[in-house]
Length: 290
Ligand code: ASP
Image (cartoon, rainbow, N blue to C red; front, side):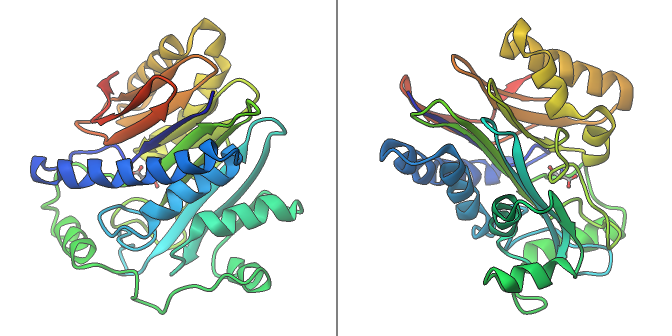
């Protein structure tokens, strides 16, 4: 009984973009589901789903990442497997369009959990992963978002971070999250996505990918907070953890989570595109209000 859920970020997404983003997360879920249906691992499924969205310029990950205040791209990503609680993560890596692939290489390398900054590209070279040419991941929309932000015209963030959670035939969970971070961030800033227990978590019972206001998510270690409450039921746990985030930080966030029996897609923000495929069928939407 396999299951995959994909998200495309929590934020204030203009209605005219909703359908495009829903199509994106649907396509990613289909790719991940095909791997699970063929007997592939949850790890393979979440990495493949996230790679689809890193290459989709509509999302804030890989190509299409938001820009630092210097106008550059620095990406963060993490992938975690639940049965052995292994995680690989990368943070603030310049011009890296496939951050989730490098995160996976960190996981499989087994030496470290998190590599950060330009020096992470030395490990990338060792495992055959190259960054893009400077500027190659920058889209017109990302430039416009930075200009808006710098002119203080921006409304709340549009989000666009991507993530996936899956359970494979063997009952193993995995979670993956990839992002360009927050528009106008300082160079070197690392958000919640690659931090174990904040934006990404998987164990033997659950898999969770969170998105939204990264500093708020870090302050409450949102994903681990959901996992710690999971015995109460996944939906109850996710609502309680998001309520705590709102009460403590005033920030906005969303998350996707699965356990053996349940699927949760919840948001405090205005919108969050999600798509899922499991035994009960497939669907997509804009996540429920937390
Ligand atoms: N959580 C991401 C970060 O702070 C951004 C997002 O999800 O929109 O880097």
